[in-house]
Image 1: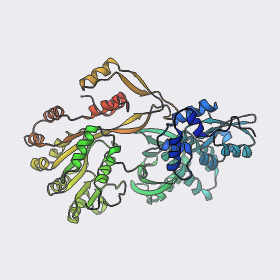
Image 2: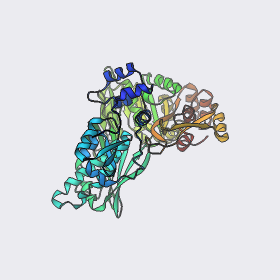
Image 3: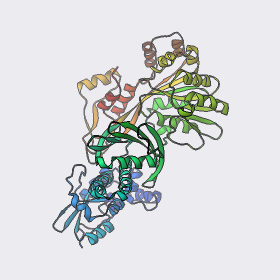
Image 4: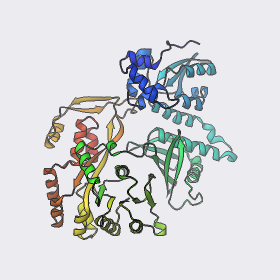
Length: 543
């Protein structure tokens, strides 16, 4: 059967478009994983963006691109292509007219897949282009909905659909790069929601009749008690999805409509970041690296839940993780396991609290200690005394700013001289969404925005924002970065603390001596075109 366009190789198309050279193609081919396609390798190694790839294929081959999350897909055409084939080749049938089947493809020049489809279906294949994530999300969404046999199966096979549904739910979570999956029971149905880039959204709904089977399947996965539905439970499990190790933290909570389940997804391949990947401004990076070189002292990270504190803690520990140091952590829970680091899991039920765990750690000859969180006076006191006796101690506090951590420690009724002597640095951070690189555009700065930037001594003429495209599902954002403020405690600040100067006076002194506050760092990242004013002002109050 005839292919509707001349067969061409991707490398040739990209060279014709002057996006990449022959030498770069040869380099990518040498570095790519075994069995990986050239296009995927180019995207992974950062030579081209997905939008550039789609634009080239559209222009050179005359193939249309589609947004599947907006496309009115004809669900009856799904029966023509098996889900396994669709996932393997990253494609999905979306329309059929007379003898022509329209198929959205990540790689529309995968001629072998097109030939196989034509042989299997008997239709002429009309390829259109869609992004990889768009297709995978559509496969998870539509094939799952289309599998209505789930709901008519006999009781003998009741477990089978629950297993498959849970596999779909987890697969979708990983594809969406979600941090959490919420399984929310209502009176009539069960909503499946995903937290992507910090925002919760509903992706699918299950029939109420499937609730108990899905809940039981989740509990079995996480090794929880399936007979106990009146008390909250927590568990964890490691599974493989798309040949990647994924840790899942599972939490159940009894509600009036049944147990609500939240699954935290910890992608182990993207778990550990180096300090250079933490979005520090150059000034903050240099200051923080100096802080890490201190032999002892207390380093605190502050911010609300979900502000990336754990990622920064692990990156810091990773930086210091060498054969000649003994690093011990006490965490609740242990999120990621690090080779060469001794990690202790808090278990309040048997009396292994942060304070008790920390006491035991001190008898294990540590150089570096990480305490997941300072929650009470006892833990704070032991952490501070540890810092004073030659240990480098990391921990977190829930405060809105770096400077606010100082009165928080004083409020715990710890002797001021202990706080003053032990504290080395406090870093506050937040996460803001990144402008999607595929639909990024610039506009002139408004008068009000200009005034805010000038107030922070920043000159700016244009601001970037995302228009919304296939790649970001119309949101204008893709991914998140951190903004920081780092207060390094020097002798002058120690004097202020000891003499109970107000936080405003400490803040004024820190600003005069070059400290970048959260808003400053956010505005600098707006100027660099990484995020938007709306995002920065969403997470940080204006001075």
